[in-house]
Amino acid sequence: MKSVTKAPRPGLKRKPAKLGPVTASGGCLCGAVRYKARGKLRGVVNCHCGQCRRWHGHVAAYTNAALADFSLTGARHLKWYRSSRIARRGFCAKCGSSLFWQRHGGATIGIAAGTLDSPTRLGSIYNIFVAHRGDYYRIADGLKRFPGTMTAG
Image (cartoon, rainbow, N blue to C red; front, side, top):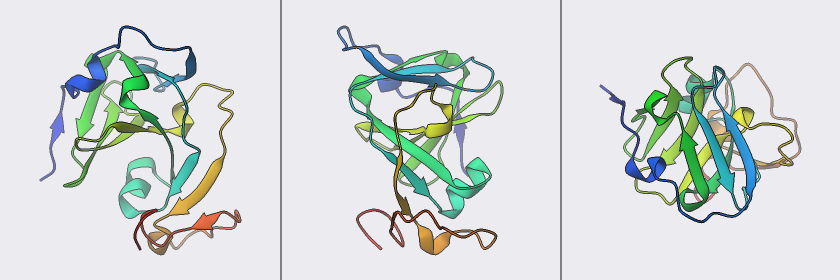
């Protein structure tokens, strides 16, 4: 059985002393969990894997930020679900919003693009796990497609 934990990884609670200007902010539906990212965000990657589709109810759209450029408020409302042997997913315990994807021990955090405040100034850059897409839709955005991850099929 997969586990749900209350405590975020220590790297998400700490706020670095000197950060540059905020480039993006966002949060959950109820506002209990908020975040800020400084520095460059990656373009949005659309993930069609079965886990993301179940987690989000459809395709997942994630940008990415370095943990060193990321700060969080409302950490007591953030829960983590260990969704696989390589990653975990963060969500708000109050409203259930799915917010983050993080590789165990990784230096970056995936941020659900729909949780960003507007304007995001981001665009989708490619699709991953297209071999696992749902049978109820087609991918017709013209973006590069990967059958699995960005680095492997």
